[in-house]
Amino acid sequence: MTHADMTPPAGREAFARRVLHERARIMAARGQGPADGTAGRLLVMLDLAGQACGVDLHAVLRVTDPVWSDMPRRPDCPPGVRGVHGYQGDLYTVFDLSILLGGAPLEQPGVMLLLRSVSSIPLGRIALLASAALGTAEIAGTPTPLTPSGFPQASLPDGRSLTVIDPARLFSSRYVGV
Image (cartoon, rainbow, N blue to C red; front, side):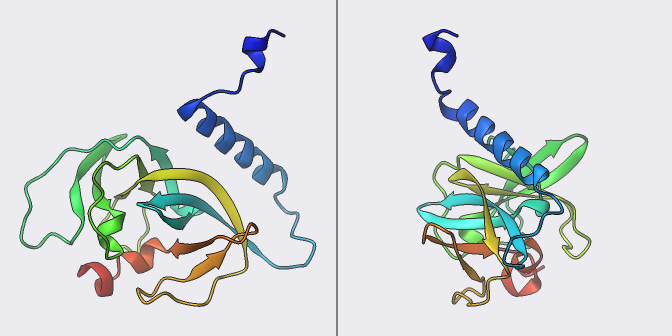
């Protein structure tokens, strides 16, 4: 093996390898509950202009580069709509997650999450824009303390906290008016 073969990959390739490694570890651990008996919840960790967020891994269909087509703003559009994105014959409405959480619009989103279709979300297929994807993390149990916006906070094993985003709650009439 040469030195070039042992050099760690950079950028997107490193992120893709890390996510694949984490998914392989997760799949290998299926059916093996934590030693203390608490149920874990897997999240895709996001950076949102410096704020840490997590979306349930099972709600995410795909993590991709932020590509969308701008569309004219209609007066009845929910806040944060940035445009549309076509993927495998389906049309996704693209939302700026920062705006949906009450923040400023993202200047240059770095990642787009395509969410799985959920019958409780009346908008159909949805994509979320964020600053960056930071991999996956497992949190123990269900976080309970709520932020003022109504989203729970979770603590990671390293002591950091993040806002846990539930897509069904995020797109309820209380938050986006649909």
